Amino acid sequence: MTILRFGIPHLSDPEVRLVKAFFRLYSQDPTFRWTIVEGPPYDVLLVDESVSEDVVAGTVLTLTPVKSELPNTLERPLRSDHLEAWLKKAEYDLRNARLQPQPPEEQPIDEQRIDPTSSSHFKLRRWPPPALLGSNPVRVRMATLISRRALRLDEMAAITEQPLAECAAVVNLLRGAGLIEIQDLPDKPMTMGRAGGRFADQSVKQSFVSGVRNKLGL
Amino acid sequence: MNEYKILFTGTMGAGKTTAIGSVSEAAPIVTDVANTDLSLGKERTTVGLDFGLLTLASGDRIRLFGTPGQQRFDFLWKILAKSAIGLIILVDNSRSDPLADLVVYLDGFAEDLSVLPCAIGIGRLDTHPVPTLEDYIDILANRNQLVPIMSVDVRRREDVVLLIDTLLAQLEANTFGA
Image 1 (cartoon, each protein chain N blue to C red):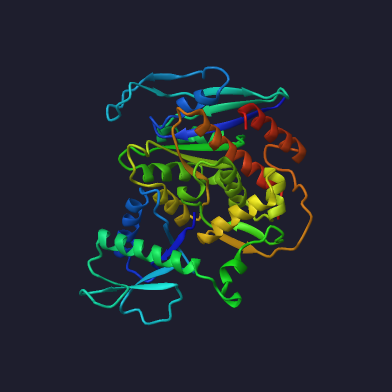
Image 2: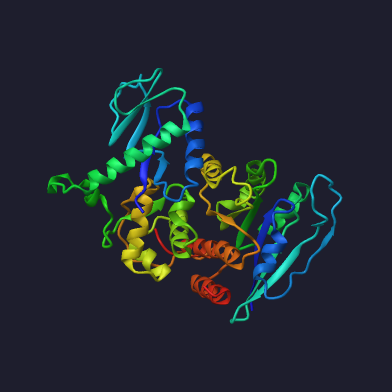
C-alpha cells in the first residue's frame, strides 16, 4: 500500500487540530491512503494563501477566505467533505502520474529507496500509525528494534531472522511515512554490546529471549 | 534457575489481571477485593499484587505481576520496577480521560523508562475510538518518548503475546547494534 504524505506545517494550531480530526475520521476507511507527516517530502502541502515562502511539495493546496475558481483551493472554514473529496481526486491524479513512464533522470523516488545492501543505520523517529504495521508481529518487532537503537539492515535481519529484503521493505515503508532517521555511523561488525541491567551476560539474555519466545509459541 | 519479572500496570479495569491470565501457565493468583470506589462499574479490584507464571524449558521463571491500579499505590510501582525486565502499561480507552491516565503511568515509572523495556496496550478502542492511537502517539512524541503502542484486547492471548514480544525485541536491541 502506498502511503501519501500530507503536510500542514504552516497552519494555525486550531486548523491543525481540525485537519487531524478529519484524518482520524477518514482513516476509518481502509482504502484511505493519506497520512499527516511532520516533515518533507510532501505529496501535498496544505497552506494558507498568505504563505509566500517557497514550499516544496508535489501539490500545494491553498486555503482561501472565499470560494475560488482556481484549482487546488478550498475555502474556509475547512469542511470535512470538501477536503475528503479533494484528497480522493489528488490521490487519483498522483497515482496516474506515477504510472506514467519517467525519464531516467526523473526517478528520485527509486533512488531514495533503501537497498538491502545499505550499510546505513536506521532509527525510528516516532511510533508508526496502526495502518503501517497492523498487527504483523514481524513488522512490529522490527519497528520496536529500531525504536530503541539505530541498526543496520543486516543487524535487523540477524536479530529477527528475516531476509534482508523484508527488513529493507519495512524500513522503506516507514521511511515513506517520514518516520526513519538515517544515521551514518562507523561501520562495525555486529557484536554483542556490554552486559547490563538484569542480565549479567549477553548470551544469557539471548538464550532467555529465545526461551520466552518458544514458551509463547512465537 | 533464575527468576525474572514483567510488570503489568494501568488503571483499575484496564485488564491487568485478564492480561496475565491470558498468558500465564497457571491461573493467576488474584488478590482482588470488593471495589468500594462507586465511580467505577467494577465489583472487584486488585489491592495487592496479582501474579502469573511462565516457566521456561531452561527452568527459568518469569513472574507476571499486576500492580494495584490506584495511583495511591505508586510507591509500590517504583519498588516493583527496580528488578523488572519489562513494563506493560494498559490503558482503558472507555474512561473519561485515558490520555491523562497514560501520563500518570509514564510519570510514575519515568525514572525507569530510559532503560526499562516498555510497551503500551490500549483497550476498548473498538467501542471507544476516540482518542485514537495517533493521539497517544502524539502524547509520547511530545514527551520525547518512543514506546511501542498498539490496540489490544487483553482477552486475546495473541494480543498480550505481541506486547511481551515487543519487550523482548527491546532487550535484543539493547544487546546488539551501535
